[in-house]
Length: 130
Image (cartoon, rainbow, N blue to C red; front, top):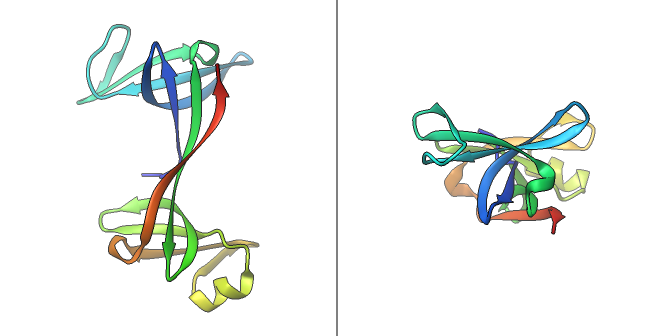
């Protein structure tokens, strides 16, 4: 499961969302946990409806951030009791001193136990507001 997602407000309700480009137009797939008019069941407790992005009154890009050993990280992925965190401090010497693995130039990641991180929070950046 990734910790980077989108949310969209449509018809006065906020939904987990995913953008989709179809024939040059941006659409949002809206996900809900309960049946609702116009939503299709795709799995138990999971429903989807696709609407034009222009019909959404707000769209946010959402990430989860945290600290590990006093340094800033992005929560990249989760599995059971672990988090894959990505260093966001921008200091290669600090990254190396923390012992994180270099994935590519400027990208450093490490699997840690969930209970080792602090200050975990969501950061939502508005990318569309009416």
